[in-house]
Length: 597
Image 1: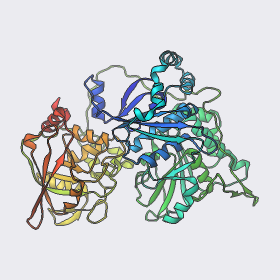
Image 2: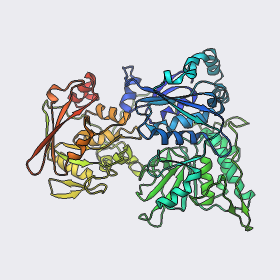
Image 3: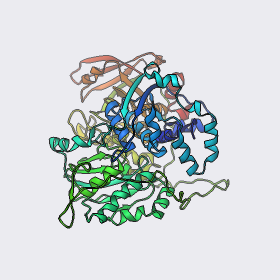
Image 4: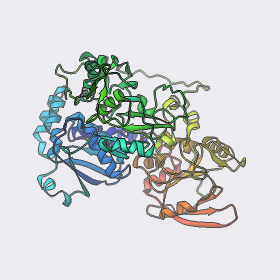
């Protein structure tokens, strides 16, 4: 509801900014703090103002606003900042369109994003049975938007101001491998050819929490219907996963699902689905480079299907649908034509759709089973492969961390998908030991350019990251991970922090951290340290032993020292910094936040 504040255990919780909420993604441990009435803290964010003018038209959609903004800010440009949209253009966007934009604010690292309350939000709230919320919001609507003095002189109040003219905005396609590689459709074909991206588009995927509203599906369905109307064929398989049971049931009633199914589309469950790799993709050769286009939010390597050779691109549902019909990444529906079964060259008409269903929403199958309040003993089979009871992590022994072998020096992007891959691994979310087998298997080793292949000093050979860490743990040896910028970008999944802690990785030393992941590491009793001088990253060698000095006097604002013990007997040292406060230091000393309670 407008003006509210919430936290949620998903990085895309800021979706609610489309209704004017300050909605912040957090890790599970932070959410537990909130649910139990404990204090929850957040570093005071900066505020980035994005002024929208003009009005969207034709092929351009709300998704293109955030795709363009991602190209401006990059994946870390919004870290520790709130993005506030303002200006006359905001009123031209539907509430669900606003939600799409806020949802993908996570991809630039933003703490959250939000829009001012307006009539489009009120219309959506009434359509979803929340008339009383509209009445409350309208009674204080002046407090639910920036003051006039702010919008008149934004540079005096925002830490940064970005201008986007919706009337001039083009459709964008972002990727591959990162959501901030932004390219307008007018330049995309040239980029495909110049970079040698696989031109054939092999699968189109529409849905996810970012782009599965009624308006999204109705505009995509209008293009699907043109296949029959214009006697065309569909060149690529289509997969659709509606955003909720309400959307699925309403889309089915209004003929959208049928329009997709006539093209041979697969309608998946109302869930994350392929966005986190939960689909069984069949390819003729997993070593062959291939391209897919989705209306999702993330396109990290291996995220969609576990295949490093899949080039995933992110676009709007409309553009994804058009490219699915064409099967060609170089197709530009704004100007190019397709050849139909009669040999005629035809052009796809601009997508159209309803913002909200004219007949109202269908509820579908509610699926909720109310609890009865009965007390039940939970018993887990000792040999279960899906569930495993947690045991407390050991407390700090009061000593500096000495002579830790380097587990991996990660090169380049290292997201939570690189650290703890999703897809089929999610069946082990309740079994920490089993899911830890995927730890850092997607990270690139800076010394050999390979994934899941690191030096094991105990065997003098190369092995998997998790296997090497397990061996060190069995020998009572803690280890350390070194990484580059924005370590832990992406999902809020806590397993990316719990797995290294479980395998006795004590320190993550990075050039910078993503906000949620840094907090998750602290909650698990790990040391999240950053280089004072980022050039010190280059000093670390593959066979080094690393020590952390100064922990006896660990205190807020006090730097620690890293000592490198090189294989040739020489040593180097440099300072590292941290953002721990007194409470978080207590978590480290206790072994985890849970231990400290």
